[in-house]
Image (cartoon, rainbow, N blue to C red; front, side, top):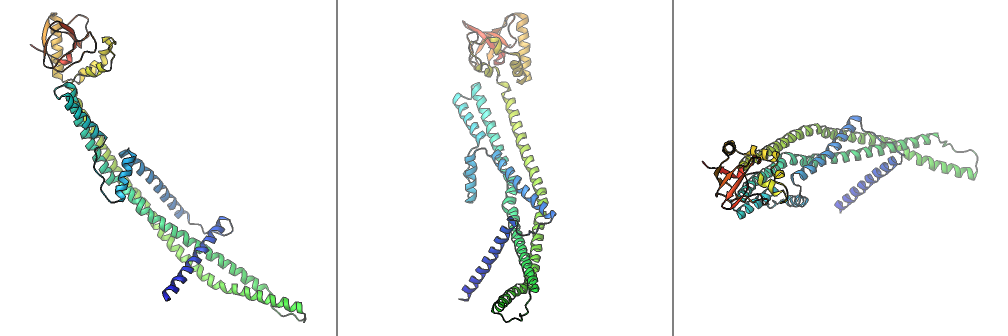
Length: 403
């Protein structure tokens, strides 16, 4: 029973405090009550904290989008994180592309030029996928986690203390309002004439009794002055203490910025490592593909009715020749010079399968030996090839001239 009485009293006191704060807040909004303003330094700190929270949320969300563009995957990771369970491991986009390329390369045959190239590209894509996975993991630990800890930890504490400061301010202003009303009542009580009238008139006596009751009521307010002054001192002390706590927390925002700066450096380093790895992987792939003729790609992009000159454009062939090994370039150049100077023919071994783009070209099979010769005015990157009764233009990058 005593516990129930205590709870009821506490509940009534809390309800009274809440009502007092609500009245004070409403009167402030209506301009009917004075409001204690925070000092400029504290206001600046509050603004800085709010700005930090706003931009941290935006940067964090956009970083998550950058690292995981798939919104469904982000939702799945969020759900597993809230359930405190590890999300199932799945191949990312580069790894999936790499696997498709490897499967296609095996299907077309590793011995063919296209199949071999697909295998090499697939392996590189898988390496890029592994680097991408490492970037995501490193960025989550060194960058996203500290940002999330600030939003869900430090800033929540700041918000809680800030709300408590707001309540202490409302309590202080409500106490000041009550003190002001008590002093006004005390002044009015002092101005009333409480002397009894000399005339023995009923109306005068009634008026005197009403005035006497009014005076006693006003004196009750006057007695509240001392109590209100003490309440103001208490609420002022609590407000100042809470303001100091809030200020100390807000001044930690500068340390938060310094910490986030270190995390940002870690994120930049992780990105730099990732892009450097990708560049090196692609550079190695380009060197590996240097032995594969680039004209195959250009031929696939041309129509069968397109003239041969447009297929073998100087810029495309020059870039293809530049990507080939120097030994192969020198061999082809010297062999071509001999053919042009002698106007004779040579035997050549076919390095890769080649599908003719039109009727003026000759299709080739890897490892077969054909006869090649040069015709005056022919493009320097092409030769005439003969296989029995068949003949046509063939790209020199697919050939190995034999002695």
